[in-house]
Each structure stands twice: as C-alpha cells, then as structure tokens.
Length: 76
Image (cartoon, rainbow, N blue to C red; front, top):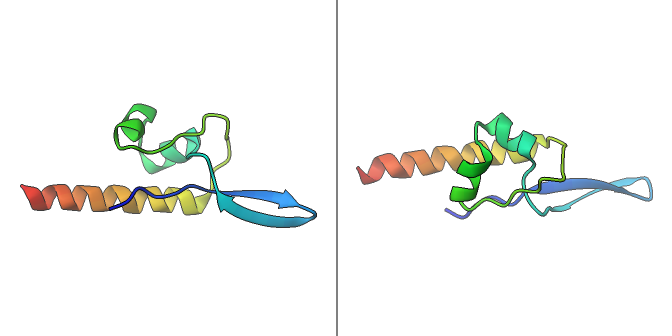
C-alpha cells in the first residue's frame, strides 16, 4: 500500500482551502501512536514546522498502520 499524503488547510481570501502538504506534523504522529524515527523508517514525510493536528491525517495514519500490521501478520 502507498503511504498516505498529508492534507493541510490554509486561508486564502476568507476561503479555507486544502492541499497536499509537505509532511505530517509531529503532533499528528503522536496522536496516531508513532514516533518520528518510526515514521521515517516507514517512509513517511515529516514537517517539523507544522504544529496543527488535522483529524483526516490522524485517521489516514491509523488506517495505514492497521493495513501494515494486517499484511505483516499475513506473511507469517
């Protein structure tokens, strides 16, 4: 499975727009139960400047981890 892409929101002329971000914030990784080193080993990009937590990103990380764990159990 392909690694999830982080979504960031920004305000432009009083309209909130979403786009693909540079990486997941450290707080999002913490909410999903990952450390920075574990995330880098999995090939996830990390944006150390961001401090926000997007719920969509946390859910995407949790889904990605569950699919990794289930595929790992299938190999054994």
